[in-house]
Length: 152
Image (cartoon, rainbow, N blue to C red; front, side, top):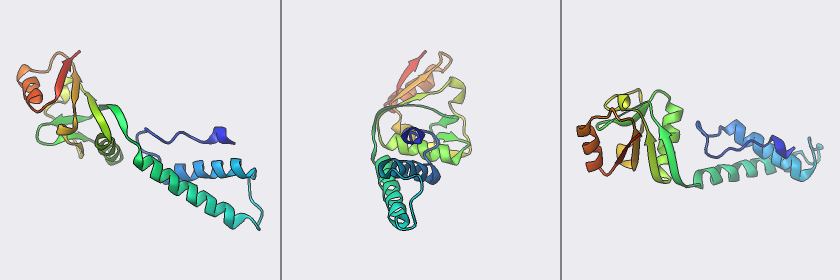
């Protein structure tokens, strides 16, 4: 039964309510030894699933990272990181807030472009890994903002 519990941490988009509840249900089934509880145990079983799901939310909300490697659809000095997907944007902002070092992987064509949804502040980026086509002026401007630029 526990083999069916999906890893929920560090995924994009973040785990859904249904995925968290399914993992909690599998855990309670394993610990209790019951695939489906009897009528006498149904309320206790459901309460256990609810409590495990709540604790799982708390755990996922509390995790922090040493380093995050992130891509982006577009980024600019004015808008920061942007993307087309609101769920992706939410996840990126959350990860950026909880990470000691953010490494942005983006080719030079994405510099100065914008997309639909704000996905993070440029100031939250520590390192930009990009291609050699980034112009020197832009690279210097990023470095003045504290972003180390690596041309690969």
